[in-house]
Length: 397
Image (cartoon, rainbow, N blue to C red):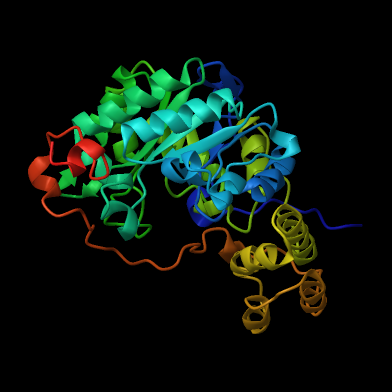
């Protein structure tokens, strides 16, 4: 008799029950309805069309999959790489969701108009949470909510340019613990016409370290009452999503690092929100097949050189926690062709069960924090509604 296979859980989720009938409601973002209420977080260098396609397969296209961030100015100026990253696969023509980045309201409005009228996008998300130094030091990303009037002006310009296409905004709790901005950001999103707000419950100073502060999501939900509030941070297992929604009252979850090297997580999320236990996670053989398919899609989307450069960073995520795989990582991180990838993965056994340790394994560069870099004098001008790259600001107006 074949042994019975069970799904695995970490200790913290051992006793979390699956959803009860009617407990989880669809997420409505303007005319878009999503059930289960799960969104793939836009991640730079990650959530391009090939990765979105892979995640979509596991959930049977039931969740919302957002593109990686594209820069409004580069898009308007027609930069080839930006246009490529903004493109959509044939399997997502009915729900094109894109994240737009910028700090100049006029440029963002122009990019929005083109995305809606010429590219036919169905949803625009706006990035107000990126903590990367080169972004915040230019007054973008997580720096923008520091200036509420500027944030309001940006959201207003994009909402007006988007017309009937819904606009959402994503932000962090603040710069650091001494400068929290998320309640103001949520209120501004609500009054300026955003159709939902999403909170990554960490400060920009935290980067991806420590644990996300889910109590901030609950607080935001108490203050933003007319549009959906989505929670982001530490969704590593499908059961985490249920715990977050139950603890915070949020209307849906945004999944980021937890799905890196684990696109099947979206299928597991669908299962538990439907009220079922998820199927057992894949063994090493299926993981290797998934990684190979991901590489094939990347090569098809870009070319072999660029596609293989992209898959290299995923190899460690796919193999996380599997015994006796580390010896191959140096070679996998240098792989240049699909044939070379095939030769390397053929050296690994296939009948190895998925390791429980991999469920919550760290999937980011490190656990460090930072002092957030802002433009000179930025905190002394919080009441301004112009950005550092706004012509009015540059001209000294």
